[in-house]
Image (tube, rainbow, N blue to C red; front, top):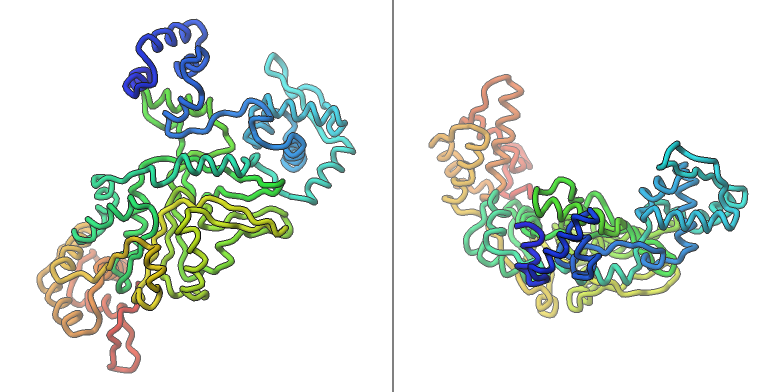
Length: 491
């Protein structure tokens, strides 16, 4: 369906409006969406809302929501640090339109902070090159002493709060088909599968508990992949002149709109590129995962004393997505300390952070929290805290039939034949002998070691009883000669 038909279907315009816009497009050129806006048929906000809550473009310094001197200082730092001499090159780095950068450079020239070096090129597209004056170098030195951030312009905290509300994860409902697709590579019992859907759509908190090695972390990651919408993440945000870095390539996966489909999707991509505030990156819903390394300090702002700006805590970087706390109960901080830190965010949907100046401010807490533990929940949570975690699911060990199905699937993936003798050995001599309980990760663990052994020997990969015996010996410790522990050592 093309853009005009889609807008008509959504009830946002009439067929006559599209006809008018098409006539305008033929005369003025550009894209249909631009003509709809030029004719006042739709506003930028309406069209952006139709395109999955996209960010309206900035056309003036006032549109940025930032102080002009603040932006001019950032532009001059970019000019100084990266040796960027023209407005268009600075524009690409600061993520603001060239028209705004030209205004900032004009302001700097009026203050005698920069000097012209002449044209960078010949022809109609020629640009003026600039360099810092003596006064400009002093200005930059003073600005760097206050904050050494050099990069994309931030967005105001207020704008960030508004956008976070618009793209809340609670608005991205996961249906059974999407959830099944995200879990397809895992062995998940049907009763657990049927409970995960409502838990995900609740978008508050889920507790997954059970013995190690049975897929709790894999399930948590798969749940995160079941969300379909994209969101917009700012490079950084600004509050009272302080900069807080948000974007993290390790957590945020950027979506390249230039590679979207043809037809209406292609038009939508081009509109997004031309009508978007580039201080924001279009990303998949983020996934942040932390485990035993989690400390209380990691949940607060991290101020770099040298660089003089902040790094956002994990839960803020995970806003709009999924925050996974793995191996809960094994952190240096006690479970009570960590959970008490989360009472207000889980209950009210916002958190309080503190600047190094002592100023506290609220920030939206929006995301699906998944807590995974191999400890009994009764040891970790009291009744009051359980009330704040609406769903708790026990992920148990597989039974014999499920284990064999997993083993068959892994063997098929590797291209290895599974013999009845190997199955009997595992069921009778390994699990039946009480050496260790079954776990869902065991089949993959065994085949990885069998494959490594065969490749080392230069032989064709095959699963024999002898090779299975050698592989399973790595699943438990031998504390004394001839004495084997019965505990599952991985997970």
